[in-house]
Image (cartoon, rainbow, N blue to C red; front, side):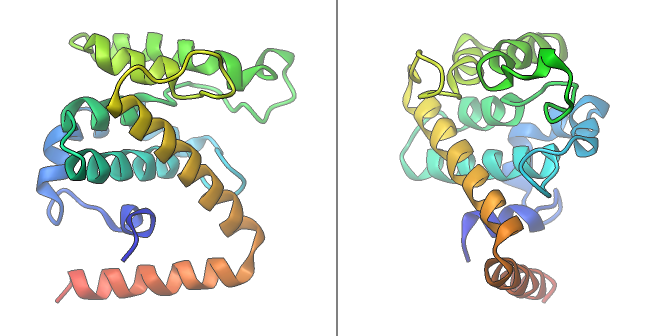
Length: 178
């Protein structure tokens, strides 16, 4: 199965290693509140964050990177408490500004945030922003963010893709329940 689809079927019981890196943060009201904000088309921000986080977790393990930094940086990369789709003028430069807002919010939520995790959050919007990722983990989170966003947009606009996604998700859930 593909990583993106698997991210929609995660649970602490079935994926304890993954949740061992993020469980303390994932269950907070701040992270769970991301469910109320739309992200890319029909996807909410919590689903997007979880997909990016899981993809970053899998890829950082595969490439021998700092799994904890990549996973936690990914979880916190879009931690902003507003709907950037609102016509409020202050939300217009969202793509350029939200990494700093997310990093500030991450520091409040996670006082032990490392410098590497903070840089992952601050630089995840490259190439839109000028500073590129400064670590392999940052590259993984940046790639995962772009990949998941493109999948989310495609699912909302392509009925065939959406049906394939739902079919794969059913298969994953069926195999996990056996």
